Image 1: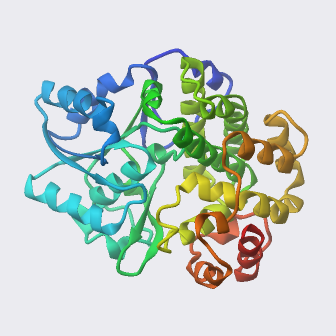
Image 2: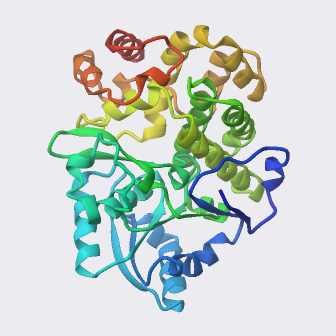
Length: 388
């Protein structure tokens, strides 16, 4: 893994930590966005730029990126139709644009949804349509356009992972497309961009970063390196998430959350996630679940999951609690849910007990990575029922 430190703020948090080896070159720091033209030009001259439906344009970020690309003689094809939870339909439309304009590189600009849609488009150009790819792990074959990830939220960590969460509209299945070819070639992480995010969205994204770190710490595939990264991420979230949830746009808070999201993303790539992520994806397959932000869905699931999982990894969950400034993980997570406005249960989001069977059947992925021994449908159902 190659890390370029374009700004010093916040990077002292990495001192003393061994950094992981992953294929993504990370450019981290305030002002990193200015490198988008140079870094993109290393991989292609005709870029498909994938982003959401308005936020990047409203805040001037889209114009800045397009201008930087055009200044380096890169032709830009824009797809700005990504919703909060991307589907195969949007990804296929992006693929069609890329094919029509002979794009040779993809840029994902925005939150996790935009970057995941860009990943799906990058592999869809070579292996599409996208729908049948959902829920599969792709073999490494070079069958994807190179991808540059530019996150504008601090949470998903998708800028350094080998997966994209997309809903296949034909099967109504929200799941991952995974494989080495989905690793971005470059992640441009500019904490300044977090200033474009409303406090509520920052809170939801930040809880996702917390979940990646807690699950990376507890996961059976974790190792000393990932656990060290996870604990540092938990510490950063504990300090900075309450601030950004309250509207703090200081450089310190932005840098801290951007770094926490990066560390959490590395945990996803190396240690994987646990039951809450599998279960939240399954919730997205329902009509009312498709509109539920990922971080808010995780916050709904976390208290019940912790009740089930904490007894099987008490030392690790105790370490997470200490990193958050307390002694009890249940109390600390409850506190963060409260200060971030992420309380409530499934019923508050339109779910009923009648949905539980559907969601339970839709849970896919590596359940064996969870600290709960051999979790299966019964474990999943108990957690869902406790969240209603």
